[in-house]
Length: 251
Ligand SMILES: [Zn+2]
Ligand SMILES: [Zn+2]
Image (cartoon, rainbow, N blue to C red; front, side, top):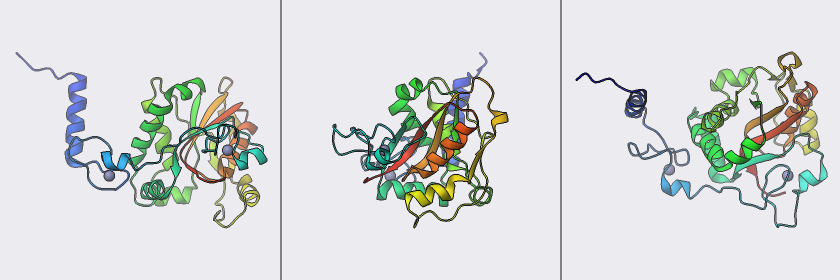
């Protein structure tokens, strides 16, 4: 009898081979994982600080009590997006992991975070009825240095792990100029700094493309998300939702 490999056999054999050649590493401790043991150490999984309700109804940041609808920032500043979902609180652990993705080329760690977002929030994501997922773009120079856009890696991973994949579009939203470092600026200054940094191409928004999900690795003050949402709405998109891996603590 001749052996005819099925597609799933070929896929699992390819996965097997890939794991021998490129052993998986844990997105938290960066160590090589034991062969075929999953995508994160169990001990490291328990170190991740997943966002817990109650969260801000706008940005998804943890708030102090059920009676609090919006975080300090969202209650003071109008946001142009519908609302956002974030997987993790931005603490020392998630900060280190995000830095490894961006500055040490650990692109594959976004597979883990995208899958975790899709698994944990799949139903809520489906209710957004998004026509496309759009990653926050990085500047061309950064893209050249880094070799990839972490927000796009996240978008592709989320899409791949949803029951119904949503197309990822990287041809609509652009970064037009390099921004100054945001670190020492106030929220208002950040938004001003960013307001001309993003542009969306309305000619690439066909009728019917109305709702999008914007993805990014970290949400802190929300000024990047706000600048991107404004650009997208200006180009004819009707609703913008957010998916972030990390969201800043505090106010
Ligand atoms: Zn680990
Ligand atoms: Zn908020």
